[in-house]
Length: 174
Image 1 (cartoon, helix red, strand yellow):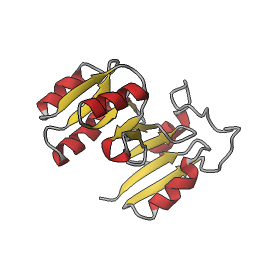
Image 2 (cartoon, helix red, strand yellow):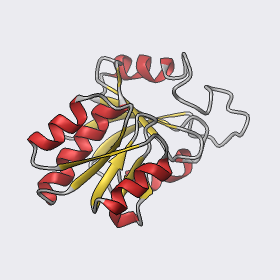
Image 3 (cartoon, helix red, strand yellow):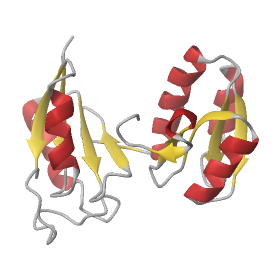
Image 4 (cartoon, one colour):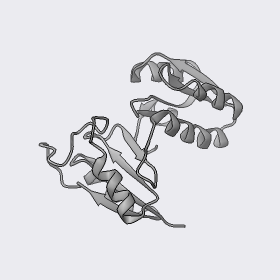
């Protein structure tokens, strides 16, 4: 089925990029705050701040969307809410991405940082992957991916990095 997704660009760069992607994806996008404005009049640029996702959550429920996606101002992090407007923790999103990559590359390494749930390495192992534990911070996840020949990695901060993107993070690949 064609997914209905509310996208909260937070007056940041996602408002410029998502319209271009939307033309190529079989998804109905419902835009929130796509106008670029460095004063961030609609919500804080950091979606993790208290109340920052309230409008996204409400819109998802209002329009009966399948989910909602919010970006931070510079689009290096993305955050999800489910169809009921409930925030999805980033280590859960990491596992969803890990499942995809492990289906493409069985046995691949998946980097995660130490503050992720204990379930993350257990589930990665269960799915036939190699969990690669790292210290907190993008540079540490990147190092764990490179040293452990990982295919992707992620953090609770909602940064997701990919080997095929020169070990850099990318919300658009995620």
